[in-house]
Image (cartoon, rainbow, N blue to C red; front, side, top):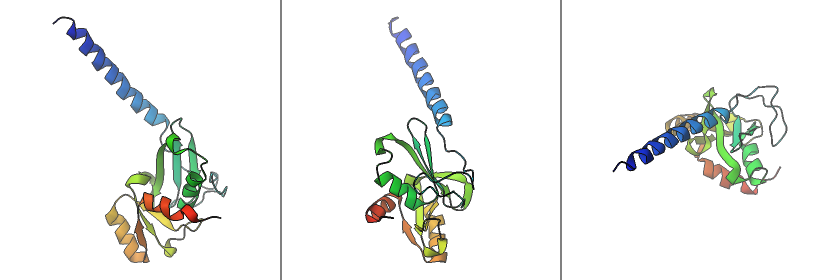
Length: 158
């Protein structure tokens, strides 16, 4: 019975080390705030100006690609400029709160001509379906998921 104790101790230490490693790596590879008027879109090379439509890809190595519009981030992924398996996070700025980043997968999107995004995807991200539905009703927009956006723009070219 005595031999079992150290093994349990080692497991506990390694899981604590693993959790803190995760914590530290997530700090280093979190989203970067946009520097509006200075940052440039990784896809279309336009200066990022509109705080309501920003998006970012963070790679497993911690490299951050910034985008001014959903159109550009989708285009970038479709063009294979970053491999899907290298993407750690895909984030969008919350349309209602430009200080907040939302995971693309958990966001609800509204597409409406009234939203007027920089590269005309006119897609805005919201944290909940309820938030998105309110804006969709006001702007005559349509609700979309991230997978819808990826699928829908597959055939569009500049």
